[in-house]
Amino acid sequence: MPKIIHAADVHLDAPFSILDIQKAQVRKNELRAAFSSLVLFARTEKADLVILSGDLFDSGFATKETTAHLVSQFASLPDCRFVIAPGNHDPLTPRSLYKKEVFPKNVYIFEEETLSCFSFPEIGVDVYGYAFTSERYTDNPLKNIPPMSRGRINILAAHADLGGNSENCPLSVQDIARSGFDYVALGHIHKGTDVKVAGGTYYAYSGCLEGRSFDECGIKGVIVAELTKHGGQLEASFSKRRLCKRHYEKLSADITGVDSDEVLTERLRSAVAAAGYGADVLLRLRLTGKISPDIKLHPSRITAQMLGLFYLEIEDASSPLLSYDELKNDISIRGALFRELLPMLESENEEERQIAADALRLGLAALDGEDVVDF
Ligand SMILES: [Mn+2]
Figure 1 (tube, helix red, strand yellow):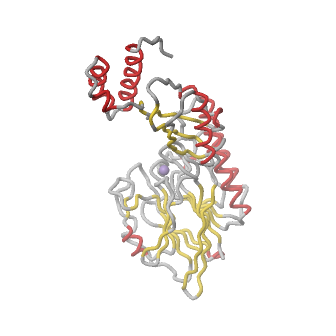
Figure 2 (figure 1 turned 90 degrees about the vertical axis):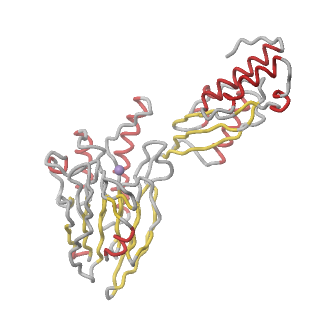
Figure 3 (figure 1 turned 120 degrees about the vertical axis):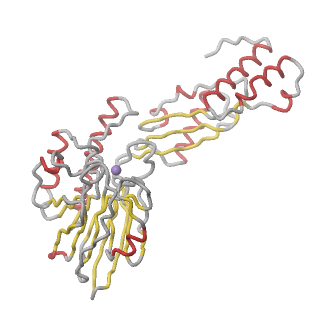
């Protein structure tokens, strides 16, 4: 039974612009390492075939180290076939890396916009596919499907936007249902999907190999497909495997009742632990809840290291705990201050709410005769 690994959207040499230079370099190396993990995984799983459904490179350029690494990785597993369908980030142009580099014999790259096929009779698999030849692809590659051999396992490697009205090869589920392929290995959408079935064709996005920003949260990896045919009848089993080194996540923590920076740190530590996040996580942490107006917290002083994370961004969306009704009806200058700030306190803009909350806290403290030196 042939074992097939489906991966996509590695985006080698992508920049990691939100991180500092050092961490960006770590992540760049990890992206390259994620590819090595894929090859190591293919080796240990004794995979017959690895399908890379587009955007292997982030752009038409890659460093010498990256391309050399890639070539040596492919060469290290000569018994495994690697099939590449260039996507919108790494289209097959005359100047592309796919043309400039010399890849080993076990690497098969689609070069045409129309469907073509790499046939592997020794494992009973035919892989169909096409290439983006520029950043745009608005044609439908499935409008002319060549006749397939029903006894073979027929796979389509497709960088495509399923259900999308886009310039990146829009395909519909109906296109897939009508296609007659056994499995459609999709790339382009970085959030992986479950394996679904339409008209007898299985299809899935593997998602990217390694998240690169908070738009790409969650565990990333590959799909392992074991497919076999008996008398033209398909038997299929699929599983997902984590391959990412680290993952991006978003989390909310209610900090109601917190009355000092120490308690805040503890509260956030427990929230992070409860979510099961550690040194492999880049976290965007949103603080919610109500904080007594006479307490000034400094969430920006909490570091990733303090919470045992690789990277941390804190977004403070907490609001002051106030008796709004009491202040609203307060006829003194305290009430006037509150009423003046109310539109800002209820603003959609988080920064504005925060400024108003600070202004109210300091204002009320000043009116109470307190020392209002802040920070
Ligand atoms: Mn992509």
